Length: 167
Image (tube, rainbow, N blue to C red):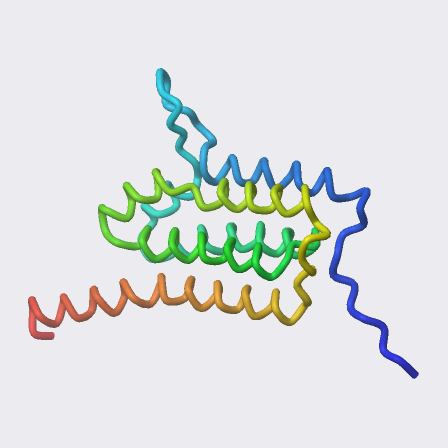
């Protein structure tokens, strides 16, 4: 008795609506509101960064959803790897107090990731789609990064508190 492979990809007819939904999510996260008189947009992701401890975690998890859907659309390992790298850069550099908040406004990881996905979908036959285990490993890696983004500030605040008050 042979095992059937796990169905992880989206049917071709469903790709366009999925891509449209991912573009909308990306816009919401990176450029929802355009500053009047400029081409600069502000999204939910940099605003989430202002929430102490959990904001960066939420931003990484929302961005991870785009990676998951890209995998379901059949994106290659290389494409997914670059997408995850964009999120890690966004999450880790965005977690730096004050400077990270400015970085979050400038670095639009989700917008970059949508462009990577669209580029892959234009020429899908050039590389093989990622398998389920690879995608799970990437998502687990993003979860660990998100946990670090919560734990690191807590540890730093505790160390600072001990240094200042000796408690």
